[in-house]
Image (cartoon, rainbow, N blue to C red; front, side):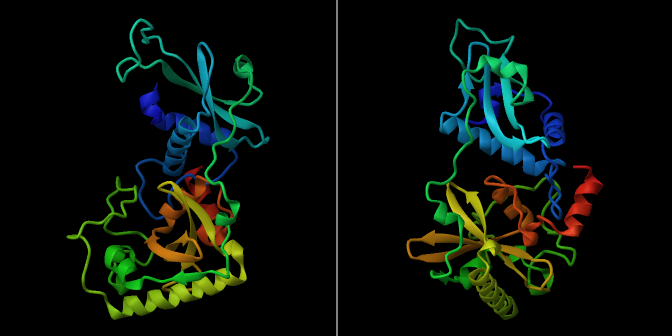
Length: 299
């Protein structure tokens, strides 16, 4: 169930902006991809958190109010909840439907807000994993590097000098301003059969170096949640050793890891944020340029 199917939601972008101001300061915007809003990461975070809460029956409903735990905290470390109220347009005499929604999104509130006194207990956090060991890179496991598959399906995501469409500033030149969602399922017509040797060599070297880093520092690998499963993200330094050009996703299959695909770092950050605020420097957690970008956008 999507939040827009569950409730009437008005002024969504404005509501996200107010939520960003209520929560602990962090970046909610892409750095290199033009998102459809200044809070695109928060937009996706709330949508997926609601869906997860609905699936796990973690939406509390009283007579005239409903709420779920956003997973966010205020600067004073109070939990933030989304509160729904009964819509004036709701007709109790007929079934709930897209045209007859019971709820509308009323507000974001702190855990100490008086509006939550109607609830016997607060909804708990949504859950994304059952085995916490999957959140940490295991250096004993082998990593299967499927170089040709990754390049063939994702060549556009590479730097221009390696046959892709990402300029020297890290900006994807083939993404329109509204194209901020990942679509890894590339059709055969979009894939390429020609694999540049320079790209293959650069990717192979970057992958091996990234795995070596993770084997020596497990915190290099950042967990993300995508399509119902936990994956790990590793940085790929193709042009310099300071800023990664791509993020490599690893899927655990029993006793080994499979290198599944490569993502733009902005997409990777958004996926990782579902689990927790990424505090890894390479993914944009503490870098000075990231902090400056956040201040510039006033988020």
